[in-house]
Length: 118
Picture 1 (cartoon, rainbow, N blue to C red):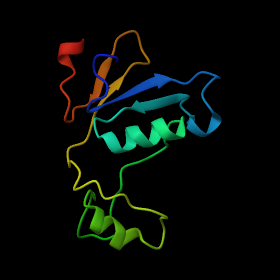
Picture 2 (tube, helix red, strand yellow; picture 1 turned 180 degrees about the vertical axis):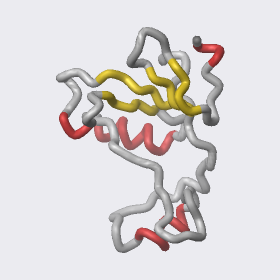
Picture 3 (spheres, one colour; picture 1 turned 90 degrees about the vertical axis):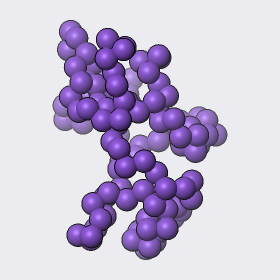
């Protein structure tokens, strides 16, 4: 993971008792993502804590997945406190790697090629 992060990967790990309850799911796993984008990394650095986030999907039928800050603001201005304009984001999803078993398994191929790390 150290070689692949920051990068276009999400790693699924077993959640231990040290993981705050808010991060745990019924499956007792947690997804860890450290993006290459400096904005969320700087926010985490300043807060001294991880961020809980999700992808932003449109509420309308016109657009499925939003990465344009202006469109995000237009659609969610009544529901969010802040939209940071860091430019239009990448539409490619991250590669998801399950690390909960004996071997790491790519469960969703996305932007990152994990083969060199296996």
